[in-house]
Image (cartoon, rainbow, N blue to C red; front, side, top):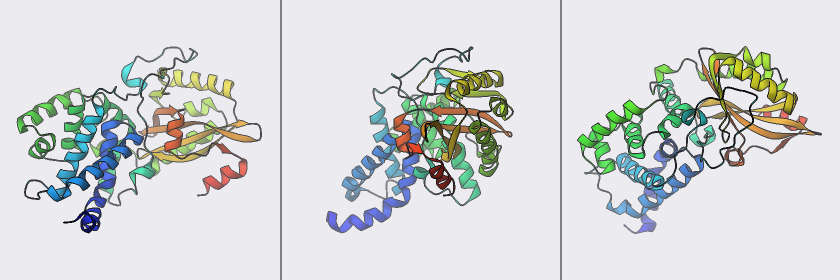
Length: 333
C-alpha cells in the first residue's frame, strides 16, 4: 500500500494507543518531556514499519509496545537514573541546615494530568491507573535496572503475558520470569495494587484544600495538623529532605519566616494526585515560586514533593505571575 493511502488507516489504528504509550514511556524514563519525544519516535518507527507488521505474530498493541519499549531502552543506555532525594540519600536531621544543591542530578519529573488525558470513567480502571502512575511508584521504578523496569511494567502494570514480554524484549520466557522475580524483589515503592489507595481523588482534594488554606496564610502549625507522623518533605533539585511532623513544621516555620506569609495558589493535578502551584507576593503581583505535589494516605498528607524547576513549570504551562484578579480567574476555571 502506498504511504499516502495507508495514512488514515495507520492513524486510526495507533491513535487509541497514544495516551497509554505516553504513560508507559513516562514510567520508563521518569521525564514528561522525554516521554513525549519517545512517543513521537515510536509513531515514526511504527509508520515506517507498518507495511511489515504481521498480525499473525503479535497483536497490534503488543507490536506498538515492542517499538516503544525498545526505544525507551535505547534512550536509557548510558543515562543516569531519575530519582527523588528520598530514594538515594539519608534524611537531613536539621531543618535549619543550608540547602545542598544537586543540580548535577537529572531528577524525576512529575507529569501533568493534562498529558495523561481524561481520567478513565470506569472506577476500577481509574484506580489501577492512579495506583501505578503515582510519583512514589515512578520514583521506585527508576531505581531498578532498565531491563527489570521494563519487565515489571509490562507484566505487573500492563498485564502482558510472559510470552508477550519475551517477544517485546526479544528474549526467552525463562529470562522474563527471572527478571520479573528480581524486579519484584528489588522494587521498594508503594504497592501497585489499586486496593492500596486509601482515598478517592475527591477525598484527597479535601485534605489538600485544607493544607492550601493554611499555606496561603503562612500557618506552619496549621500545616502540621494535617501531616502523617512519618510525613516526607523533599525538594529536588536540593538534596535536603526531611521525615516526620516535627522536622516538617520546623522547616516550614523557617520557610515562612524567610519567604513571607502572603501567598496565592493554583490547584493543579499531576500523576493523578493533587498538587498546587504556589505564588509568592512580590510588590503588586505574585510570582511563581514552586509546584507542590501531595500524597494523601489515611486522611493525612504523607508526602510533599516540591519543585522549583523552570522545566517543570514549562511542562505544566504555569503563568509566571499572578495579580489578585488573575488568581481569582484561574481558580474559577
